[in-house]
Structures are given as structure tokens and as C-alpha cells.
Image (tube, rainbow over all chains, first blue to last red):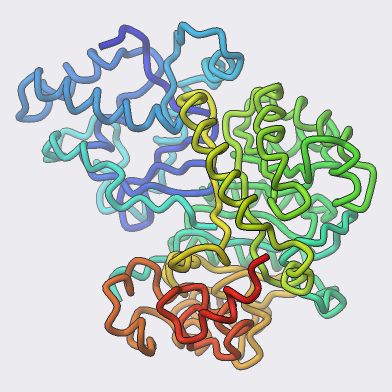
Length: 152
Length: 343
């Protein structure tokens, strides 16, 4: 587990569809997320490390810290392959990775809170700390199960 | 049908373009599209798209930056919560335009190059624009916006795939799309000249596979397969009328950007009817939606919900019937038409 803070890559936005379902909008596509993946990604702010995100999820949902840690690591590993998630203090000197650290996390959170609450199922859906959500975190593994990124 | 859910709209803002790439998929009768939607009509269309549940707007053409109201359109889409993607050949992206687009909320820009070197690229584009594009790519790369570099592959540049990847590395591109030419519109007319050879395709796939491995985590390489060399057809548009729709410059609503070639279908226009209604009920969308329309061998095929019968436009162009199995499929009775076209 790394101590770097995950942050959304450039052009990656988390939001809810009009039916309330969580989506990760990416360059030229959209991934349908399940609620547990969404709960994880809603905690991505460019400050928290993956470990801290896992700890928060373990507090909120009925999963062990070990299970939460594994699920969060698996989700981020998959999303990092396509640079939907990058690490804020990336060790490599790749310029793009450095640039990605500039795409400020607060702006992403703002996008999230602007999700169209009027059209979502309930106001909790747009709240990043929604306590009412009863997601089972282990579902995070199938975050991309319905993903179709070739919408073009 | 529960799995029908409009996700993305492609707004072809204009078919005007300053380049003359022979692989363009735009229709041949470009003059029929000159009566373009007004700014207000595009914004109303985007509002209807958002109302339909669409979350992503691709703005393309032609060359979309030739629309003087592009910034306004991007701003409207962005305010509606739509993810905005600009697909451009890039040469009109001055610093001023770029900054205005980003301030309006543009999320992603895709810029094309025709080849890795100026001589070949300018010959393919029909204009001396390659150096200018490299400058634009650097300036976009310096800004806080996601960028995809696109290169359409065909016989005249397929051998340079490795050099295209090297160019992308030099430009610190995080996402590279290498798209084998799709034979629609002008590309269909020019298909004999553009068709890559099997050797080119095989070598290209090896180079892409090796580059993906080497650049894992640093650059995503999207590789669009060459239709005519495939065993099975692409899942065109993720299925007809399933997730995607296109609006042409003059307002016609199509299930696929190449569908205006299908003369046996009647398409409706946002000037006359609301976008959501067209999506839900128009004859053109309903005709090939789902699997009920399928003939054999699709009907009983275990891949019918994998590739959705392939591409309706391709079936029309190659088999003369938009309701036929895509002839690209090795199980199609018309498959010989495709093998005969291979170089």
C-alpha cells in the first residue's frame, strides 16, 4: 500500500445520472459504478491516502479494515491502469504525472456536490458522506462491470 | 427495453472543414448540410439531451471550431452538467479560443494528426498544418484539460505506427487513439486506396501490444480494430439506439454518425420534434433496436448481445440491406464481399 494520495486524472468526473446511478465520466466514455465503488471514489480528495479512505469506509460500512483495504487497493489499481486515478505524489518524473497533481481536488469535489440533486433518488445520493448508503464494499471489485467506454 | 439508456450525444456542429482527409466518414453530399442549426437550436437540443438522461456531449464535425458560437455551446452543455468533449483537428485553437473553451467548462479535447511527420501528414490532410498541430498539442498539454491524440490509420501511414507512438511520447500524451479507418462516407468511396494490407495490420498490432506493455500507467493506447480484417463485427454504437445518438449539422437525429447513408430509413429532425421523443419512438431508432429485428445467423447467435449484429450502415453499404448481418462477420452469408475488399 502506498502513502500517496489518489486523485482523479484529468478529464475524469464522478457524478450521478438522472436516475441516481453513479457514473465515472472519462474522456470519451462513461463507466457505470456500483454504490460501493462510488462511496470509495467520493472520498477521493487528493489529500486522503488509500489507507485513510479504506479506514473511513470500514468505519461507515460493515466490513473489516483488512477487507476494505484490499477492495480499495483493487479498485484504485484498476483505475490507475487507465489513469482515471493518479497518485498525487507520484515518484516518477513523468511530466504528465506531475501535471495531474495540479488538477486540484477541491474542484472535483465541487463537481460532485453539484450533481443534479433534483433528479436523483434522494438528497443523500449527492452527499459524499451519505450515511444512509448501505453498499457492501466488496462489490467494489466489479466497479467496471457495466463499463462501456466506447460510446463513440 | 430496460437496457436502452441514452448516455451520449454526438453533435456534429458543422461539416465544414479546412482539411481534406480522404478517410473522412462525413457524407459525400456535404452541400445538403449547409443549413446548420442556430446557436439557440443547438442549446435547445443539448437541454433536451440532458432531459433525456444523456451525460456526455461530443462536439465534432467537420471542424467544430469553425462554428463561431462554439464557446457558447460548450458553456451551455457544461451548465447542463454534460461532460463536454471537443473532437477537432486543432488548427484554429489559438490561446484565446483555448482559454475561452476551458473557462466555459470543456472537459476533454481530442486532436488528430495525420502522420508522425509533416511531409506525410500534410499530404494526407491536403494542407500544410502538421507543424501548427504540434504547436497546438503542446499548448493544450500545458493546460488543465484532458487531451487525446488521435491518428486514423490506413495504408499510407500504417507503417508509421511506431513513430506516431514516439511522437505521442515526446508530446507527453496520456491518451493516444490509434484508429483504423472506418469505411463510411468519403472513406468508403476511397476504400480501395486506403485499405491497409494484412501484413500492415498484423505488424501494427504487435507494435501496439509492445507499446502498451512498455507504457503501462503512463499512456493509454486505444486501438480501434480494422473492421474488414476482423472475425466478428464491432458492437457498433453499443447497439443501435441503445446508448448513443448523433445530431447532424442541420438537425437530423441519427442512431449512428454514418446512418444518413441508409436511404431506406426516415430520420427525424430536432427542428420538428423533441429529441427525447425521437429517441424513444422514431421509426429509424426502433427499427434495429434490441434483437427482435435480427435475421439469421444473428438471431440464434450467442454473440447477438455482444456485437448487436454489427453495423447497420456497413450492412447497407456492403450487402445492400441495413437489416442484414454485418458482412464483416465471418458467419455472414455476405462475408465474401469483405474478404474481396481486403488488400
